Image (tube, rainbow, N blue to C red; front, side, top):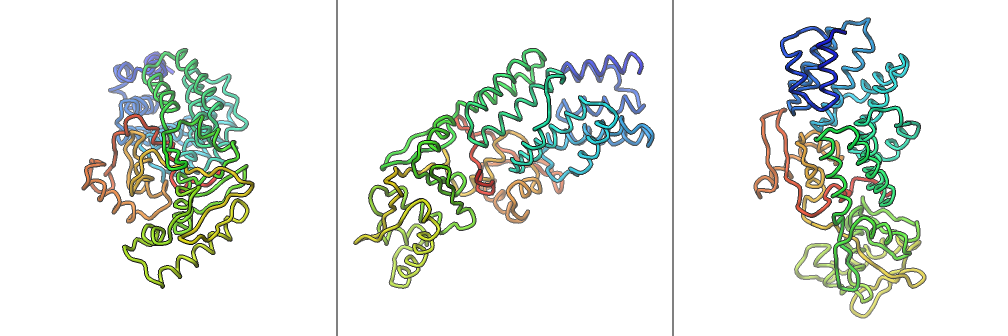
Length: 406
């Protein structure tokens, strides 16, 4: 490898894409194309970066399998940065296997990290954790160690493990300081700030307040019966009842939880759950049917008793009942939670993340755009959506309903 290629690679490793381009901007050989692609990616020109990386992979030829695999890994990182969740994950797994077979442990570890990030964005925490179980970050460069620790912190936050997240972020801060890359240091600092931001609202006995991740973790371990409006389920002492696919039952459970220790009036339940202003006998009969279904589902955690004016939630063993809601609630909260990471998303990527149809997501985006809550740029398949984060709230920790109860 010649001196200009070596100097450009060192500039990229130090977070200086302009310095790298000054050395290889006019060259068309395969290594130069690959380095130009990485530099353009660092500058935010994702479409141009992917084009250059694909050209580099073709220029390397079929015999240079390691170089081609590195180009695939770089393209996967660009796709992840542009939130293209539909990118071919199998190609990345194949590239990782190739790098491992040829002894390129650093790039193979980076490929594994990218796979885990993709799984984390898709809400597949178990698979992401198993993928990283055998990774030893010690021999990795400082920047890669920081990225690895950021990923561990993100998974710990999703698992509601505050101490593990804080420990991982402390290691990320240390690695980012050693790497001396300003952009990486800013990303780590943003993650640290997010850990201290409110992640939910606690509603109990008619009062509500904002809570941070440590408080949510303590709440889950307190033995209280928690009506979890972030993941649409109920939990107590490690027992979990998911109602994510039964919205009517969850709506009833939440109203009963908010009314506790009192009962919830029948007419109020009908009005808010069935969205009717006036209730007649048929609606009250339907309410009794849904309450019976909810009673059967919640039997491991609580009982529901009828009172003179409505229904009362009675937790087992006389436990406290609390409701954990999102810090900001509105109709398309799950969609906004994805967009609030500050990155631009395509409609197809949002549909994959939310496990919904593209048409459903498109209608929601159009509604939010009309209200001035999201913005778009580009046209057709190149159209991307973004929204500034909600100030003061850890919106990426809202855990949209499609994510599984852990």
